Length: 195
Image (cartoon, rainbow, N blue to C red; front, side, top):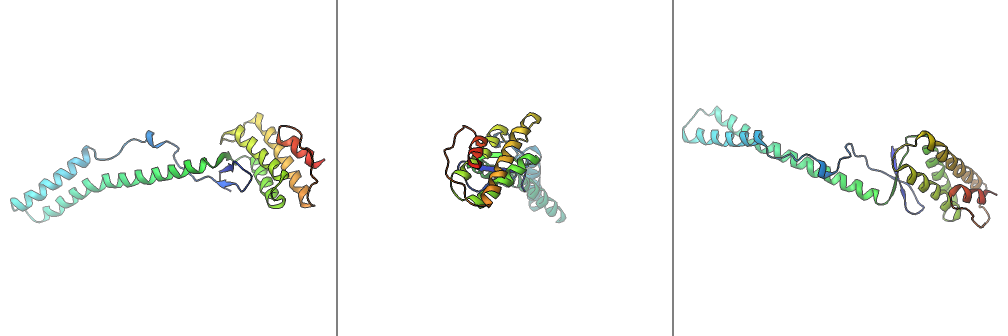
């Protein structure tokens, strides 16, 4: 299981969040490109190559000149390619995050909630039961903001995990009868469905 998933805005499958090894934004990246060493290598290589041709210096200096010129041009090109690849990764990550709310699943209580929701999603199909389970995920994801739960939040997550798990167990026996869902939170709604 990945360390983070995206809880979609509507009931449905969870989306794996793409991994980004460094969470800095592109604007925070130090700009790499042509610096003094690259300019010295490229200019020195070009000057040496011209000197070999004009002053008829030894031929082996041509190899040194081409190597210096190549290094002076390749290093900035490599930095530019790496910068483009990183920006593409960050754009893909941002696009995925816009699909829902990130949820860190490294904590056992959160993993239990995610597992219970996936079981509920497979058994329930669309309807009020799946909506109540999805609401539990959204409540937890909104509370945690993509981080693991603190000690005082573990009970909140565990209550929703237990409720969604109980609902998934109940639905394995057959559909729940339609009820009037009372209560503002997911636990109250799930308890109404289980009653």
